[in-house]
Image 1: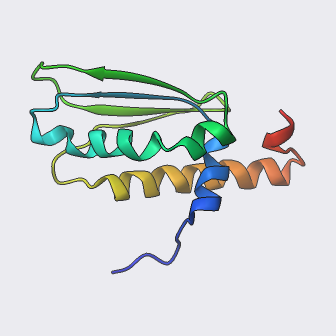
Image 2: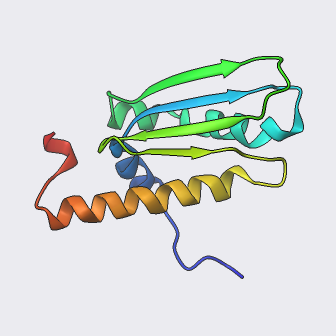
Amino acid sequence: MGRFITFDKEMSTHLFKFVNKVKISFNPYDKRGTSAREIMDRLHAPRYTEANPRLKFELDVHQKATAPYVEFHFHDEQIFEVKPSYKQHATDILFDVHLRLAELDAQYEIDGKNIDEL
């Protein structure tokens, strides 16, 4: 079953203004870390840091046998943590993050706030 909602580059860039920090931890030799590594690659696009100068990255690339994780710290102090597995694709994880950010954007709009003014 396909998705009914998509997020283009412009919307994705706008929504990531609501993210203050992304923490990524993975072992590059472990298949479970593939999605975390791909998320790291995608989010290091210059358009995200240009649109949101507050956006910080904490990377932990290690050789331990621990499970990978990705944490998104949102502007409203919520934390969205994902523990990706080798079966979970980065596209699906980022789609879930975009949905949560779209909800946050909608709430800001309802409250009459603008992320660009904060």
